[in-house]
Length: 419
Image (tube, rainbow, N blue to C red):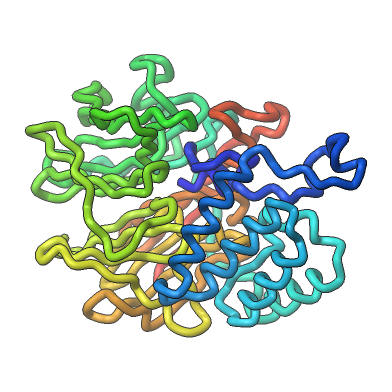
């Protein structure tokens, strides 16, 4: 999850959305220095500049120039460097890839500026509203703040993870919601990505806090805790999403360390997977049907790793398309289904890939600027349909806490038919 993309400026999405790491400067209260005319930098300015330096090095490496421009524009705006931000944003939107700055907090302070409004109008002409889906389920609990969703084909039910309640619920086919792992039963951290083990039907999930504490969790099909595992070092880690191979191997994205790890269940050791470039907040992850290709989403796009020969390369999104800012990522019939919630206005998209998995051959927007794309994070495929979290409310969390309890709503799960 992209915690960092939905809430107040905290580095690292740590919790599903460490949420939008880029709150517009005008959205913050002015301090005395600002009133005197000397702009004060945000508290996380040093870390933001490190992120800018990383993306500056990667912008000529990744195939999607627009992804780097958008990221840099958002970070510049976060620092209060509006002129640079607008220049970068204009260059990005001129590529007509799908970025929509009107849909997120990064550029909230620019909404009254005519130049910004004109840019948004052009984006909305190029990428109109798409509303193909409908509402599938609604929970009674308002304070879940969900992040991960997984489908159990054998039991015909969904598992939904909770950041705020630190638990996992299950949703039956008739919409009935019940606890799979009750809150406080195992004193869990906020729960994010969740996947079924194809070998035995058990459940794996990731959890972590903004402070950098993380665990990989393993539950039986009845919700009993089978194991909890953490890296054996003192570094900050944030296990976000994961996949489970048929041989039992678990692969997790670590958003805080910028790594992707294989977990060996026998030795209980996490070993990093080498990629062709440094990753910027790795998040969504997917396995091809033959389990030979691994797809890793980060701020700037998707990296494909060949698990047999251990080579890797960026997937080229092609013209007028972007693979940036993906949270949930899923394999289906030679392509990928994605929840893109860090490109401004969130959207649900299907990408058809070339046989080698290195190039997008067709991009189909399934849901865009509709009532079903409030704060989506992840989803799950059931047959030919994609179920996804509509209103995660991750933008109402910061430092692992709900900011405003009066804004909490019942969680909605949407569904859209896949092409």
